[in-house]
Image 1: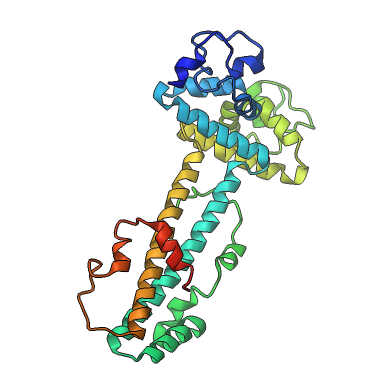
Image 2 (image 1 turned 180 degrees about the vertical axis):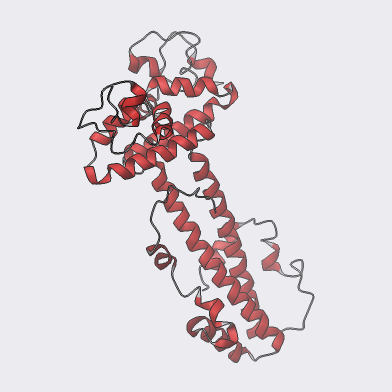
Amino acid sequence: MRSQESRSTSSCAACKLLKRRCTPNCIFAPHFRSDEPKKFAKVHKVFGASNVSKILIEVPEEQREDTVNSLAYEAEARLRDPVYGCIGDIALLQRKMIQLQHDLALARARLSLYAATDSAGISNTDSDQFCTAALGEFPVACGGGFMDSFSQTSYEVNQDTHMYDFSQIPYI
Amino acid sequence: MSSGRCAACRYLRRKCTEDCILSPYFPSNNPQRFVSVHRIYGASNVSKLLLRLPIHVRAEAADSLYFEAQCRLEDPVHGCVGLVFMLQQQIQAAESQLVKTRVQIAVMKSQAQHPQPREAESSFNNPFLRHFDNDANLSFSNQISSGFI
């Protein structure tokens, strides 16, 4: 276990930066090894050692490594983007998810069209042309209203929405 | 006693000056907002961060700090990074579904172009679909999906 290695006489990254003696029960030592000074430096810059310590004390020991890693991720995101931090990453992922949902809906619609033309016994050429026409021009036969919602690209869909709506939980 | 203090200065029990960096973003009518941010970041860190930013983006920065602080208070282990992981998983699942659907389209298109005697439409009989029953073998699916739609 790495925690065993860090409990040596050498200071952990945190205590080195804070210029203090690293005690055997230092809460930072298991998670901020001396060979990773930048990790603690970033976390300290954003959250402060005292706040990190309070957060770590509140979580069970077996979850502290995950906690430190998530704090490091957030700190790095905040230093990279001081305005939005991790929220910027979330917004990007949300946009990607919207794009995927759009593509998936299109693909499923297309699959339905193929299935419909296949069961109707429409010829090879006709079915292909029918599907192309359906997706490109929204004929009534394909449910123009339904297809109309997929005429927008996800970029257009997002134009009207505020990029970062902190009032909503970004669950999809 | 000053009655015009912002939430930050009220909490920190200090005088709220006219050029208080925190007062525009932590109004006195929402004390909880500052408490959340202070618990996770500390007033000093928040002040330093806001001071380094142009004025026109400070409101957004304060909002994002508040959102992240709330996430961290609700989930001390993962904070808002939990949302990142969740979205990444959802994206992975959606990508897998998309590939599967595109393969199905490819199969149907192929069958339409080269009609064969009808068999039961089960993935067991379909060598393409069999690969995606367990959403596995994405590298194989990536090769197929690159040529369609």
